[in-house]
Image (cartoon, rainbow, N blue to C red; front, top):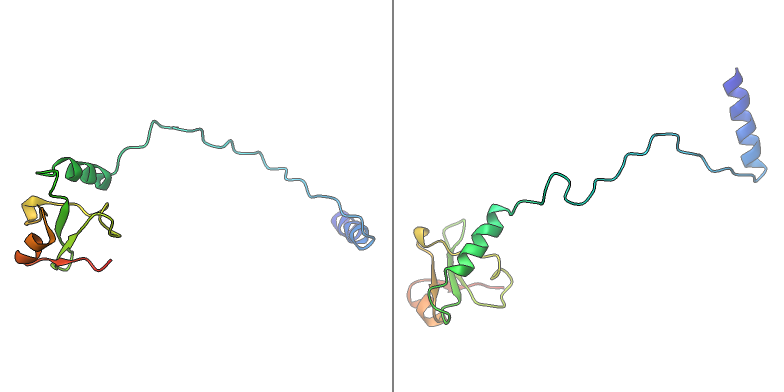
Length: 113
């Protein structure tokens, strides 16, 4: 019964235009600190990209000839949308080309974006 009176009193106060903020009585959870649990580990993709960038055979050979998930042979030139995230895996038949012509002669097509 006591709760009903409290609710009625609150409704009356609100109806009268007096609004009191509701206080959160829960115990606050502290925010995690930076590097909690140690620094984040590099992802396998990030490591593979770094390795691919380090293994360019010649500075002039910057075109990435890549085989897609569907088996399509596509090459990417610097500045294209997926160039930075494309990984060259020579063990799968992918390679670094020195010219678009070289990649095309070997059966690769240029990426659309």
